[in-house]
Image (spheres, helix red, strand yellow):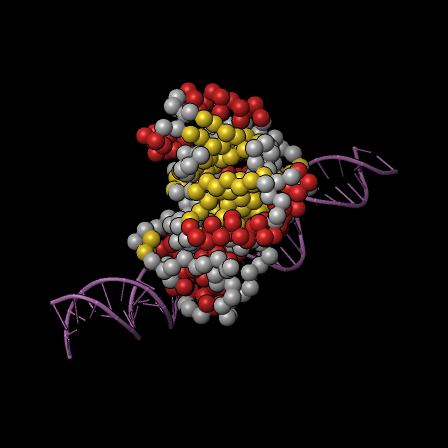
Length: 182
Length: 182
DNA sequence: CTTTATGATACGCAATGCGTAATGCTAAAC
DNA sequence: GTTTAGCATTACGCATTGCGTATCATAAAG
């Protein structure tokens, strides 16, 4: 079963149409690709591409950034951490966890974990200190902590064309063999 | 406790020095920032920045790409999935899971999960089908599956300057309050 | 039909990306 | 101390790009 394309609809007051998706797809392959090249490929003017990208980035829907594999870049201890906290604390705690410098990402979940986060460290001791001392000191109502060390990351892709289901459309370059660093 | 800076050392045959880290930090704030601006800020020539970026991207250490929040972009059902598989199957299964189009990321872990992945879907039914039918059909030795739906992502940052511990150094622009979409 | 708003296009100039050649730096060999 | 080799950085010129502004096309509202 091919993954379904997201329906076109307003998100954050912006309706992503096919052109937006193709632009995002192009920039997910190469974030520095010249707007004119993208425009030529998509048969629109360069200004259109530029204005669309501005709209997408200004609205915060996308960002063009350097991404990479933390482990390869020197962070030996990377872990996903699952927290359980009383329901009333979930939103506030998630927000506060997002402020830690070592924390790269935070999501709210439900079920057997309420908050999921990823934290970057150079030593096991640093990770342990974060879990054992830093977090509990400021977030006393955490009821459970589970740690899942990330030993190796095989895939961490940003190939929107695949997810948008664009790869089978005519005139669109085929999906590249993905192996994005995380 | 401030997060420790990764030691300088060879990774993938490349030794990341302070200049590399500053360039990566700049590109993590804005992946399209002109090389000349970066060069001016870091007091080196434009060609140096350009050549370093080529080296970093060619080696696969970093990539410049459009990143964004899946949920905001129309993927309503995003989940982290934990798998347990017999030790002998971990590497092979992780590799094969990385090939699914819906799978955005795959890591190898140990302890109470052997493989952790993230999968993107537009409907709960699609996610269920992936877990219940697609994966088991090709990966029969999975012994356990746990699903952690990501309802909301509060933080997913690519601000390398923070992780590299560059923000306190003189002459370096302060860490912007970036709120990266995932 | 006219007005208004929104987005696409055309266009020109300043700034950037990039290839190439020259220069500087470091360490090893003599 | 000098020479040599290897490598990173710099200088420089030209083709290309980014960007601001004005113009045009389309559709909705009056």
